[in-house]
Length: 210
Length: 216
Image (cartoon, rainbow over all chains, first blue to last red; front, side, top):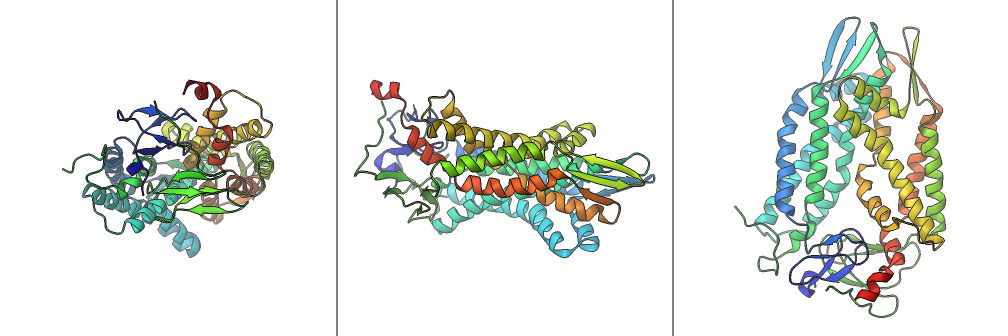
């Protein structure tokens, strides 16, 4: 049985179970957080963050994340060319890790959220367990995409030797960070319990399907 | 008015899975045991070993390491006879100097501020519960620990250090500073500290505030 069937809601912050009054509005007795049966406006908020992330994904990959100026020569690197550089000049295990973290993870994360949002809106009840597990993985791995931004920040801090060499962050870095942060927000707004909800549920909080 | 779900048998509690909403009766867990949801497999409740003493010790160590990691040089680069020393803060400062304030804020938040706030607020709550002191803002700080968690990216930062090492390897000589060793230790200690810390357990220890109990 689900908590919803018993008219119970659990607090997002401290996990306390409370009877939710008919108005649907109350605060947690233990930690004062506003209580809801499901995260309010979960689906539309998650869509908004996801669409914004998908838009930012293009400039994130097309614009350079950093520019190396060495002896008057400038060379720009995008996310992908950075990975290729590592493959050619570094070692392949590291190149593989960076490829997974900064190319594969953001892409798969957006596809996974897209799939979860669409199936929730269609009120699908196929593979609920796998979809919940997919959500868990999405929440866990997203942060690793930030690795490229830290690399750019460290290189910019270290290589600052005037005429010899300077490394400057490029516009792609801002777009890429936006992708990472927006997908983290999109995953946080999504309520995995919606996967397990039925169309006729009391105080249904999913928005009508378009 | 809402009312708390009444406790069933002694030590048993009704918990709803936060991922699929399935209701469970969870009894007293043995130290080190984890209760999982029978429907979706999510973690329902934990009872980390070591009571309150272990997380207090680990969080104190983490706090000291964090201070060390942010005090001394992190990396030194030798290029063309010149030395460039950087600290962890230097990473966000460089972004700020390059005119990317937004990015500098994100890097500062994920590499310094969020870890510092998370470690110190966890320690504050742990000490308040351990010594049964009614300190101000305990509940607020305990709710912070959960919200800050996704923004603590020390391990990701470390991977970034490794990549930076390889990228600069054939261009310049790199020296590691004291901070780097403190930072590596910090990541290990923080992982142990987080697994010994269970926010839900602390919420249960704090219970419902007195004035509310009288009201309902």
